Length: 417
Image (cartoon, rainbow, N blue to C red):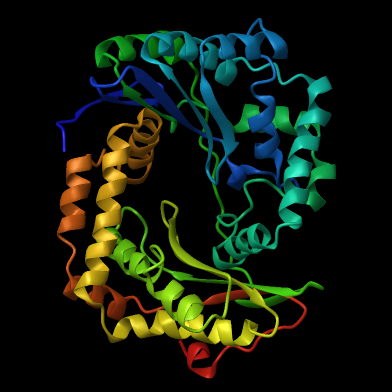
């Protein structure tokens, strides 16, 4: 792995700038994590942060919507704004020479958004269309509903919002969300590419250094959702979602946990695909992934199948997960490591991936994990380490959600876990 130059600067108002120098590229990218995600949506108004992520670029400073869009487009900026669980995520990538001008525009977007009331209905309508599209896509719907049930409130709250809550949200709600939540203290800006860290620090100090702090809003954690549930849906297909606890990114065993899930679902040679789909022909889609927040992590699994095969699919899926404790082959782990190394190589060339990674690392860990460190952690994973993790972190406290015409039975041995 190439040497990485990482620079950290903490501004007095609580904003953290993390810069990674990538001299071999001509581009640069930035990723903001700003407090204001879905966990801060008012009760009964889930979707406020999502609407704000749309409205925040509908004019800012002295530019209206059209003028701001043209200014961003003139810089050749590939950009994204979205609501996450705890943050608004705002990112962009362009030629390195254009990054200062792009950040000047985003200083207006974050600090002086117009949030025009006459644009509110269009923004809310866009969120509504997204949610209705998700309702029509059972796989998307089941994974959203699964997260809400398997995590304590409000950590599983849908980041896109809820259809039933949208009518209660107003332009004033969105403005109030902005005023309450968005602040420099707790915000993280990751920048990666062909940039000079000292120049970047001076620029961010000029643009954001006098952004006034606000009190951090408390987050009250409640109970977890229903562990077993069926949503009746008249269809020729049944969709199965399951979840169980794992360790978050900051945990020393995270990479071992990742490897265990990768052996289950990391390509067409992984356990779930070969055992449930290829050998038994029970389903048309099956997967599992380790999803992590700062203090909570879950393995989320999905299978899509016909109604006739649904019960057998659930049984085989659960058994495949349980049977991981019987042993792992060396070649399974090596394939998992090879996929990780390929991903690392691709990250070396992607400024947007690196800007997001350094911001994420700082949020979760308070430091940046270099690509070389990740490579060393991956290479250090052994079969005994995976087996030790599987035995000490068995799939307990399962949340199982199904969508289809008929509810499924969970095997008794699973219920005992």
